[in-house]
Amino acid sequence: MAKKKTSKKLCPSFDYFFEPVLKALDMLGGSGSNEEIYKKVLAITNLSDNVVEEMHTFTMSEVEYRLMWARTYLKNFGAVENSKQGVWALTSKGAKMLKSGKIDTKEIKKFTNDKHGAEKPESEDVPAAEKKGWREQVADILFNMNPYAFEKLAQRLLRECGFSDVEVTRKSGDGGIDGTGKLRINGIFSFNVAFQCKRYKGQVGAPQIRDFRGEEASSEGKRLIDLMDGEELINKLAEYGIGLNEVKSYEIDEDFFNSLEEESI
Image (cartoon, rainbow, N blue to C red):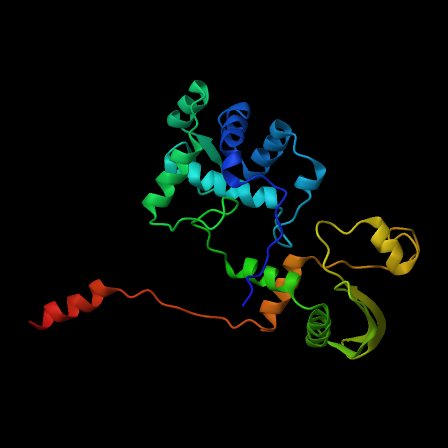
C-alpha cells in the first residue's frame, strides 16, 4: 500500500522558535501571555503573510501550534516557566542562555525526548512528544473528510439544532454546502433560512459574505448573517453526540483499598 503523502508546511519547525520565544519574553520585561509572546515573536521573526496565515486546525494557526511546543520544550529544559494563570516567565537559566547567545536546539530537544522517553520524531517539523487532544483530532477529520460527507454532516447537525425541511440545493467539489431549511421558534414563529457551510482556513472575509448574499453583511436594513467557526462546530457536535461519544473515567484510590485490608488484619 502506498504511503500517504503529506504536504510540506511553510512554517519553520518548532525548534526555530526557541530563541525568538526567549527574546520575546526578555523584550516583554521577563514575562508575558501566549498572545503577547505570539505578537512579539512575529515582530522578531518577520515571517511572511503566507506563513502567518497557515492554519494547523480550524482554531489554531501553524505558528501558534509550533510556539506551543517551543514553550513546552523550553519549560522542560528550565529556560522558562509558567503560572496557573497562563503567564510565561524567563528563568535565570533562560536569561543566561539568551545573554550568552548559546541556545543549543539539539540539546534542548534531546533533554525533553530523553526525559519523557519519546521516540525519535518521524519529521523535524513535528515534536516527538506530540499527543493531539480530541478537539484537534476532530478538527483534522472535519478538514480532511470527503466534501460530500461534510455536506451530510452539516445536514444532520442542522436537523439536530431544530431545523426542518433541510435540503442541499447545490453540491460542489470545494468542500462547501448550500441549502435551505426552516426553523420554528417556540412553536409559533417559522423562519426560512438559507445556509452555506465551507471549510475556510483563517477568517471568513467580506468577499465571501458578499458572494453568499450579493451584498455587504453589515449594511443597514439587510438580512442578518450569522457565522459559525470551527470551534463552535465542534462544540455542537459534542453537544448533540454526533460522531462523538462522551467517555467518563475514574482514578483509583489504591490507598483507600489498602487501608481496608490493613484494618481487617
